[in-house]
Length: 169
Image: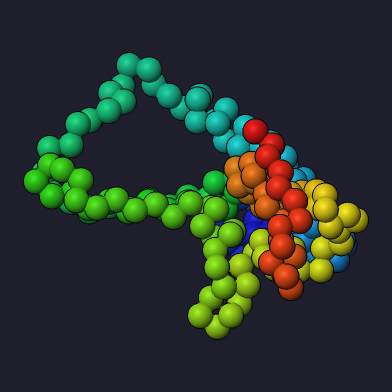
């Protein structure tokens, strides 16, 4: 949806399809999140194809760093969301390394202002046909983060009783 507006830089990707679908469908849904991932694959394929044409196979592909101390970070958009890495190197050894993966953003706890995370917000009000077989919970969760729900435990919020346990692996 971010690429759907013309607010970016001239070199940034612009594609209004998913944002238009979001507006016409009345918001985000499991279907829209899965469609957006598939649609993004087309863009990524074209970018990979372009990058492969740019390779010069005889050029050096790796230059070993000579610095013994340094700090760095990198951020990108993975298919499931924002991915960020930070590293601190001292004396030629890693002193600290931190990663915040898309799962952290998607499943993260409520903010200090009690704002729900994206996945929790999407689950609120989701219809469940059978409380003892809540497959819909897995559908919603996987639409955000396919790596997350290999095991799902469903509990009754009032009693704490476990209703069901599912493993997909």
